[in-house]
Each structure stands twice: as structure tokens, then as C-alpha cells.
Length: 266
Image (cartoon, rainbow, N blue to C red):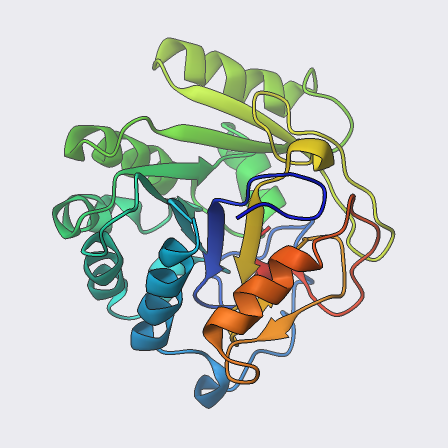
């Protein structure tokens, strides 16, 4: 389907959980934030049904996000359910990589095609500080496991505070060059202030070409990351929620006062 600004909407990003095993400085406070009760998080069966309906109206690219998607129990079962839906040509996942070494082969066997891994620093001390306790060696082993499993291309998402020439970002670039990995620089965003820019090396943040819808972990379809609009899959229902999100997709992002990055998938 095309929205009212003649943009073809064919990409669905699905946040399957608002939980995460890291506490990155730009994402959430050290003590965490209030989490959704488990009974408000949509089931895998509901997610698969949303994807089926979305494909029927033109979606052919699907990405699983979080929070951190690999912390949700049985995620490989969801991957298999989505992979079995005809019409999806691009099926990926965004992960922080902490658990990827354990899951890479399982995910590939279940039908996942590729992964994006968040990596903001290579230096162990810097990574630990940025993530409040994370072990970068786990991430690096996860990246290697993903490559060995055939989850290609492995793309690296690197969040920068000011510029991609920052020390940590430059070191991540060097690591990617040595290991033949694609890198994308994402400048720190602020939902409340409406602060965002186009992703370096990617197409995110370019409103004029945006082709995305987002499904939150509690079943809301959002037409835009930087907007409060959302449509519940329970009422008015899946198909209507998707269609309304496309029809009401704004020309460009503004501010989002109702979501946080941990429950919308970034």
C-alpha cells in the first residue's frame, strides 16, 4: 500500500519485548523503567497473525526488535512462525549481541535471514561504561557466530553522540573494515524533543522515503517512531489498525511522548 504522501509501505518492525539485558546510557536509566505486565505483551500467535495480515496488504520486509528480542523465551519459535509466512523477502533481527553466540545457529535454522548487531564501542572499558556492565567480548563472539551460521549480511549499528569520527565510533569502523562488516552510524535520538537525523550508511531517519510501520510489544501499530499516533490490533482489529496507520502516517516525524526506545524498537 501507499500512504497519503505516495510512499510505498512495505516494512514492519516488531518489538517483541520491552525487556533488555543491558542498560545503555542513551536508552534507559540505570535502575531500569516500569515494564509491561506479561499479560499485556502480545503472544507469538498474535504477532504471526499480524504479519500474515500485513503481508496481505503489501508488507514484504520484517524485522524483530525489542528491548532485546533474544531475552524473550522461545524467540526461535516466533522466527519459525514468521519465516513460514509466504511473501516475506527480507527477514531480520536487531540485537545487542550479548546472547547471539548461543542463538545464531538456532535462529538461522528457524528461518531468520540476517541480523543487525548494536555495537557502540570495541574497547572493553568503554563498552562496559556505555552499557552499564556489558561484556563486549560476548558481542564479538556473537557476531562471529552469526557469520558462521550464515546470518548474512551482518550489519553493525553504532550509536554516536556527536559525530562518527568520535574515538569509539572510529574504532568500531576499523573493526568492521577488518572483518568485512557493514556499519551504520545512528546519531543519538530523543523522542520527547523530536531529535533525529538520517542514519549514516542506512535509510532510517529519512522521512521522505520512510516505508515503515511499527508494532509495539503491547499490540499497537505505529505509523512513525516520532509521533504519538498508534492503533490497537485488538480494537479496531489487525487489518484496520494496519490500514489506519498507513493512512495516518505523517509526512515527517515530530515528537513521541507516549513511548520509550525499549518498547518501540528504535
